[in-house]
Length: 228
Image 1 (tube, rainbow, N blue to C red):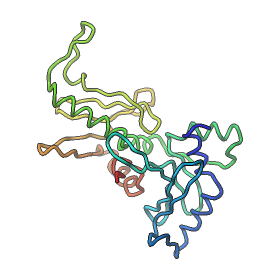
Image 2 (cartoon, rainbow, N blue to C red):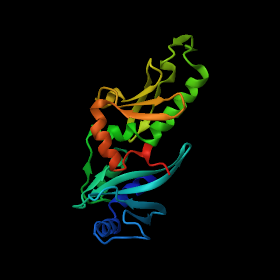
Image 3 (cartoon, rainbow, N blue to C red):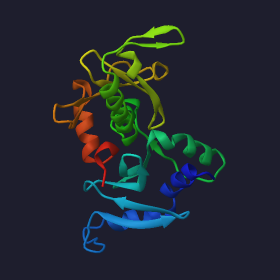
Image 4 (cartoon, helix red, strand yellow):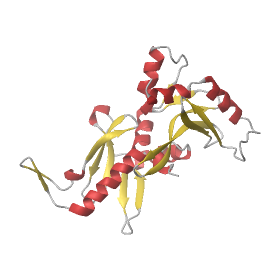
């Protein structure tokens, strides 16, 4: 198994499910905390984290060029149903087909997974790089291989977030917006990232996704906001 498969398999480990059941009890407490429990599987350090009374995430701490973040693999509800984030779905299906996992999983719809991708640490890393490049070159057009690239397009980014091909497209107002690649069939911008005159970055879902954004942020599934 590769590391991503190990993380996925941990979500279905019986010992993890037992710990989730323990955390759902009203009298649960660990080292003075009622909302978290550390654990280790496959030489990987995880934690179970309860952002609300009805859901518990399985998370690991990831070190990135822009800081350390808690990243979820999936989460449990009070009936011990297991929800797998899109980034880990391919690993789950491979493990299920090879019978290394026998339990059924639940999956999030594309809009939910897209919001998780739009407000991930991976996206924020790309956003910060975009503004760094813009601070140097500004609104100058660029020539590549004898072709002129308009100033806005020179800052566009294509990368992967939450298992999706993702795009940051730089708009004429001077900030990037997040889209899924056309192959995913979800049209329209999902989020925008605006840098103020003071240099502070503000992160905004589009109107269509505001309610979903608020729900997922409460569940601590948006890693842009889980930095420690």
